[in-house]
Length: 258
Image (tube, rainbow, N blue to C red):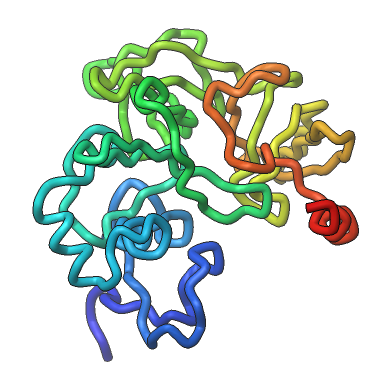
């Protein structure tokens, strides 16, 4: 019997949103343990090699990272399989480029280029609120952070804006009807819309009903919802498509126009 954690990942078992070609090899990079789950992250080597095309091979990725050129959320990372996840900021100081990892309207990770001003902060979902050692109030965020002494009005499922340099909460958005949200899981992952209502089911999952900008309504579980703003104003810039998913016919017509 094999013992211990698995150290390899076959390419066919890799998450489909990594968009790896089936015939490009046998294996895929296995994400290291880190702040994001294996199925909900994008390893650094895929960002540099497959998305930004700064490297042609795995070995070139290692060479770039060992020169301490890449930062994730303001910290230099040298692990080629380091897991970056939703809302993480990847910075390359040498080229003065900044990117945010975010979902497109089809639920696939995109490396979205942002300004240096926007790269100073990130949005984090509050996954848990609790009392820590000696009764100190804390909030646990979706990317593994723990922040002490938060605003007493912050509750679970709310979103906080974290200043990356100081690790302090500068602003927060309540999770409620009227909030602008991005879905991070389920078949509607990547879609953006406004919460119309919430349904609580005792002993089961809370269901959230969301309406997007084109008037389509859809429902999902509350755990798949990530608040990104209020009304029609997101606090981060969105990638092309703005989270509006089109039908196959609409996509075909748009392609014909172009």
